[in-house]
Length: 275
Image (cartoon, rainbow, N blue to C red; front, side):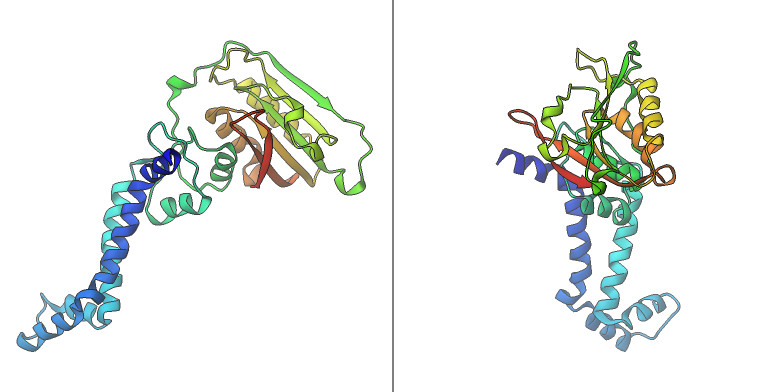
């Protein structure tokens, strides 16, 4: 129940704005505003001042509803332009459709990636859903530790031909990842694990870590199907996605599947999302 309430609170701004747009669209039908305007023109002569209302009224209540919808939408988009979506210490687990509506319809241009599921961070950045993804640099200081480790498992494993191009990419950052946490049907695949020495679980940024990931991704063969298991912080995720996987730079990757880590028990990676 608590999670449901938190989600409603998180959606409140966008949901209320969508509700307002629906109300102004259907209001003319409810009040039959078209008939009221028509009665005014029967009493008054058409003048330059009221001509715009005359033409709007030609479409009847539907035309008036559309006019009010876009009039209010313009105001909403202007207000949202400089606002940041996803505020507060709440887990922002929403569908991509919701984020798309907030961006393309309601006019949000800034989206906070903190407390957004990693698979959704990948999808939002790759698709350029929002213009900006602001991150407070204070919370992601430069890492003084540049100890980056790369390990490869099952490099020469004799897989079925259909699986030759399917590779696991494990990005170990904020929390450690045990390879037993990934799905059993993926454990036999070639697995590249890139780790940042972060025993204190600090949210720090390492450009060396990002560059190492970019290098390894670009070394992958054409047509690679990539399964990603990550515990990267939002700043790392943004830089990795933008520089290694954005549409203009991932010609060698045919498909990307990002697995979301469970919060409870063994924190397994069970469900995947195609990006």
